[in-house]
Amino acid sequence: MKNTFKNFEEYFLLFPEEVQIKLEALRKTILSQNPDFEECISYQMTAFKYKEKPLAYFITLVFIRSQKH
Image (cartoon, rainbow, N blue to C red; front, top):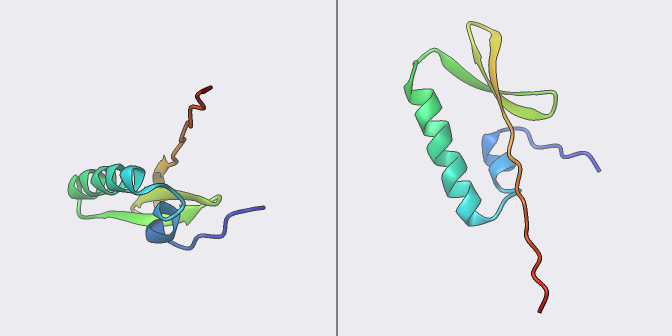
């Protein structure tokens, strides 16, 4: 099923809290670099644009390790 998040906040909620904290820190770091950077959703991925053009896509890969007991 395709995710249908509409903003960064909804996207972050797809992940565990520990990952959300790291994503938010990265988001703040990127936005602090230039006041003209804007957040957007493009190709069903979070992204940043600059002067109406894509600058960087913000995707998250979470690897879950399974352990045998």
